[in-house]
Image (cartoon, rainbow, N blue to C red; front, side, top):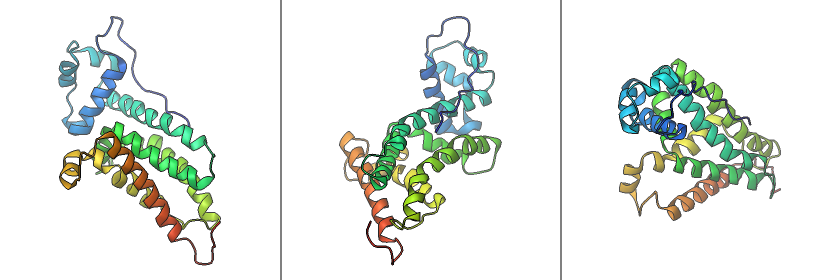
Length: 222
């Protein structure tokens, strides 16, 4: 799975007090919390402590900043998942478990990504087209490839990619994108390191156990 090329504009000639990563991380929080229409580049300039027109000079427009931010964020997700997608140790079931677990852990560290996807996923738009075609669809295809092979062998039941996506992304990773609600449900702090690890393990185990339990009746254990 290739990491998408960033669409960030040319850096300004003068030195910038904020690094590119700080700029894009701030932009990700802004778009995730306020949506594209509610986001303010001027407010982000103030938050970063940079000149009022620096981001415009660097990226050209709020739209170009959005694309650069999405490419950066999903590029990081892809880079962290790639080792699991390439690691065949322990067989395909263990590989799938590691992929699901890693996906949940990655989004626990960067919950703004799923909040941004939730906002953009409400209505059709060119941004949603780009988000899906360049990032969501390739990532989903890479993750479901091993599951498809297991289903063909009768080890697990076939599963809809849509069902799998929402179970893992907007189900399994939801406590991190909705932390206030997760704290009310409890017990404990959902963002504590041990709670994150335990949750990721449980999500992976439950999904695999369910798929194995629903495998074709004439398929014995492999």
